[in-house]
Structures are given as structure tokens and as C-alpha cells.
Amino acid sequence: METKAFDLLIVEDELGNQGIGELVAFERADYIEETIDMSRSVLQKELIPCLFELDFSHPSEIWSAFKHTQGNFMAKSAVETAVWDLYARRIGRPLQKLFSAERSAIPVGVSIGVHDNPIDLLATAKTYVDQGYQRIKLKITPGYDLVPLQALREQYPEIQLMADANSAYTINDLPLFKKMDALKLAMIEQPFHPRDYVDHAILQKEIKTAVCLDENIRTLEDVKTAHALGSCRAINLKIPRVGGITEALRIVDFCQENDLLVWLGGMFESGVGRAMNLHFASQDCFTFPGDLSAFDRYFHDDIVEPKARITNGLLMIPGQSGIGVTWQEKQLLKYAYDKKTYRIK
Image (cartoon, rainbow, N blue to C red; front, side, top):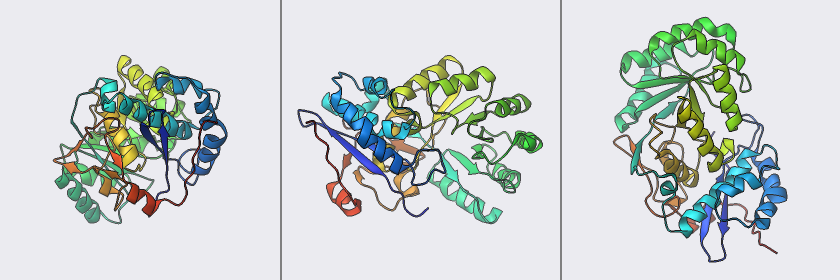
């Protein structure tokens, strides 16, 4: 992927305060069912008109108001996170303070894709380890799994190492996962189908390594199902995929109450979504380094200041009010190809 299309939603109150949210849905329905075109349609026809009809005092009320629209979590999140940002800026507080978070910086991990040979893989890993990334996630696929994981573990015996299977395997691959169990991985992420809970539960019972669910998780109810069946011991939480901050907070609370490790994943966000993620991940409950890389991990430029840069394995939490970053008009005009304005009639 050489380019990433995304939309920014800027909401403004009667005092002129503004908040910003990011629509991160992809152009193809190859991650989840929702695409950016679908999200735009739902936003225009349902969610934005609904927002204009609301009289609310706190952004958590947006989640309840949107419940009549089924699914479309990324569209909901784009609006809801913009309102959270607006609210925090309106009261002059950094977003993290609304979660009682205090950390000024957080450790982060890096995700590494398929490489042609072990030499290239280890060279890539060394680049990121030298930059201070504190956890390595290797994307695995049938035929590219055990051997590269073994190479990384041999090179870095103490680093937090995990495998992300992206639903590429079935329960028939149980013997393979038992071999991975000897590598002392932090977790194996999403080995099976994204709507499966039963086979994941079978696997979790058979291995010591924690199974982590990712694409399965759209709602708190999904987390409850996974916990009841014993399908996993960890959750990769992605705020846009669960409809926004309010539902994400509910999921975090449940995970803490039920001894499930929860950590924050990323969606190739611009600096807007990344800043929101950093504020959310600054809560003390997030102890496992998330997929919140520096901006230049994926992009050659960004549309906000300050840009997220890694220092000694840490990313700083933008310290100003709201999500703490300022979107740059010059950069927006440089990269934007359309603009729509909606007003209360």
C-alpha cells in the first residue's frame, strides 16, 4: 500500500471551538465489512443529521444516540472522537485528563511484514530495535511463520515478541501453534476466522501462549463472549473498530475486571487518529506496548503539528488541550481533494 485515503471530520460548537476526528475505513472491504464509501454515506444520511438533532452535555452521550444505526463503527467513531476532542478543547484540558491519565510518554511496538529471507528480516528488526521500539510483532502466514519467529527469538531472546496471523490459519494448524508455544511469545494474534470463538477457545486451552483477538472485537458483547468461552487472554483494542471512545472505555473496564490483557492497536492513522490513540493509551491500564508507531513509520508527511516522533522507544503525549495537535491548513489543502460543510438548519 503506497497511499492511504482518509477523511477528517471537524465539528464546531456555538463558541467557535473545534474538534477533529478521523475516518479510517479502508477503500476495500478486506479488513472488515465497512469501507470508506459506505462510511461516508452513513455519515451524510444518518449520523451527521442525528448529531444536529442532539442536545448533549458530554461526548459519551453520542454513543447512545447512534445505537439506532447498526454497525458502521468506523463512521460512528469519526464523529464521536471529534466530539470528544471538541469537548476537551472547550473545557481547556488534554483529552487524557478525561480518562484520569497522567503519563507524558508511552512505550510503543512495531509491526514487521513478510520478508524474502531471514537476513533482511533481522536487518529490518535491528533498525527498529535500535530506534527503541520495545516490542516486535511479526505478520505470519502459512509457509512464513515458525522459521522467521525462531530467527527473531534467537536474535532477541528477551524482547517482547508476538505473531499476528490475520486469520490465515485453521484449527488444523494446532500442531504448528504448539511448536510456537516454545518460543515464549507474548501472544498469538487472530489466528482463526474473525467471527470464530469456538476454535480460538480450543487453541487457547492447548497452548500456554496467550491468544489475542483483534478483528473479532467490535463491541463489548464480543469481549464478553470471548471471555465466557475462554477464546483468548488478550484483546487488541482499536477505537475506530468499536465505534469510538465510549465503547472502548467500556471494553477496558471489562478487561480490567476480568483479568484480560488489553492493548491498543493502530489503523494506519494520520496524526489526528494517532494523537487520539496516544491520549487513550496513556492510561495506566495499558501496560503492553501498542501499535502506535512514529508518523514516519508509514508516511513521508503528516497534516498535524507536533508530529509523532519516537525517542528512546517512547512516544510523547501531545500536551495541549484536546488531542493536543493542531491540523495544518497548508498541509490539508495540499493533500485534500474534496470538502463538504454541514450546518444546523
